[in-house]
Length: 163
Ligand code: ADP
Image (cartoon, rainbow, N blue to C red; front, side, top):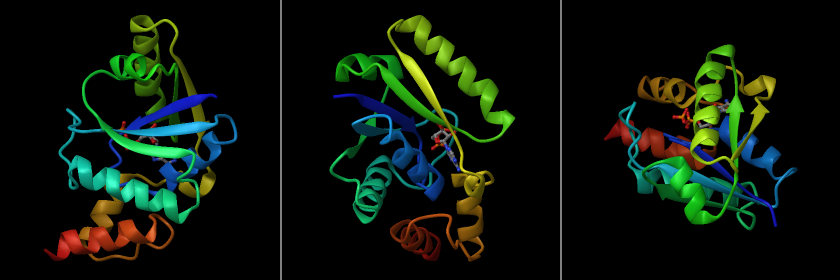
């Protein structure tokens, strides 16, 4: 049984993230979406529990909830990998701008935990431009979200900004 951890902030989960999950299932038996509880480099719109709940609903909607789980995590990714006894990490790659940071993280993780392997999935062209920040900005100004996020996320964004 091969399990991969997909870590990120997922604030909120987008169809780009879900595409990475779906495609990871062609390589791995199970995916655990690991949601950084309090990412140090950004302020979040949805709290950790809300982000996990949105991911779980979206996974059910696309019919992969039996092979994919979502949970909160805090601390170092390598400690979480050790605790879960998992050695694979998957990340999505969009532009070259992702590459520097991803390269650095993969190397540091491998230094801290030599068994760790990071696998990169290149974004599908339709999700190339898509990220959570863009989605939040659009929702804030009540713009169309079309195929960017699952329906439950669109609802949650509308509620958040209506409040
Ligand atoms: P982080 O804060 O770690 O960047 P994100 O929630 O933004 O977390 O993203 C988690 C992972 O998903 C990252 O590897 C990111 O590159 C990837 N990702 C985000 N959006 C897309 C997308 N549209 N297509 C492919 N991968 C994506």
